[in-house]
Image (cartoon, rainbow, N blue to C red; front, side, top):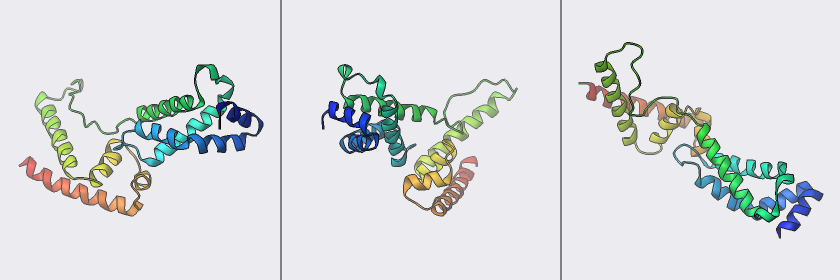
Length: 182
């Protein structure tokens, strides 16, 4: 269906117009959203949400769409990309696993701060060595702050399976880090 026909359908019968729009461009818009969301932090459900938002945003801003500036296809891809980038930007880490030292404004000693930095590195290295899906579960849960229910939906697991894997992975980390401390 051509852009002019889609626009007429969207204005005349929004429900049919959106169905036709999603049928024609759904796969493309999803691919753009998925490509712009890091796999370790976002799952297919997040990409689907960006895709749905892109179609909704396009429809809500239909009056602003100017066919002379680009096709519906390109407009939808731009919206999907912006939605995915915004979603990724809003996702802030909960635990500081980075290697940068923070200012010592609280009076702690440089030695204790360096020890904490080494411990963070060791923890991150141990988490990385766990392998998937345990590594991804721990990063999502403790670094990104996602609840078990969200992680389970993204990884196609049950919530109890995610919780069990989390518990076992933490025990494994404790054991390995005890050896590191010696």
